[in-house]
Image (cartoon, rainbow over the protein chains, first blue to last red):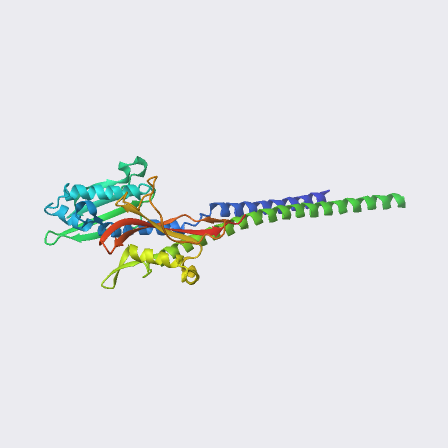
Length: 167
Length: 187
């Protein structure tokens, strides 16, 4: 009788060991995060690519001045008239572009144009269109920002910056 | 007496034999379920690897297209980043559609583009003639669409903001370059 009991115990231990091994294997497999290679690449490059492309484009409604030229004018004397001022035209164009791209892709972002740390244009936040996508670069986790300086010599430098928040 | 002892030994042997068979059966059942489970998790693992490969292929194609001199803008032979010359794009596209050079071009570039779709749309200025269809949707300017197998599914689309330069008018529009890579799913 004792021998039988010992044999059954042995069998039970084997079943227990196999079950525990199963549980560990399942736990390891289920908690493994899926690969996000493309997503990481996309968001890592997005800020830089957006800013690079944005500064180069020309505005047909404003005598084909480039965005970079409008930024320079907005930061200095605001002499360009489209007929709207360069600052107003700048904001319109950038909002139109973001509407068709970052807003459409549900990206959380914060866009600023600053001269000597002062905004020359009201910052554009994704939260203005959708509260859930509001971006605070100082408190939220962000991807690599896209930023470029625009020289307005001898008045200093303007920094165009796009922060993408991870949400 | 001897017969009784022999009978008792025989019964014990039968019980022992039954025990052994039961252990073997239980073991086989456990191994069987283990193999089924292991097979399904391996399948998940292979599918995940395939998804990762498709994503890597998409990134590779994006980098390839972004750096192609066949599409880049250039001023005084200096290439510009994130810029597509739309006249070059149109010529490149016509090359694939050409009766004379089409086959050769397709065979040459399939090593770079693979089973993918590459196209751009113009975001700004919006609504220009030729850039929107009758329903107001942006027109897709397709360079390459090699979706040869209907049993394939696509990866997520990669989107890259680009400048669309028209060297004739010297105007620069804002566009998005899309790359979609197709792959066969494992069922």
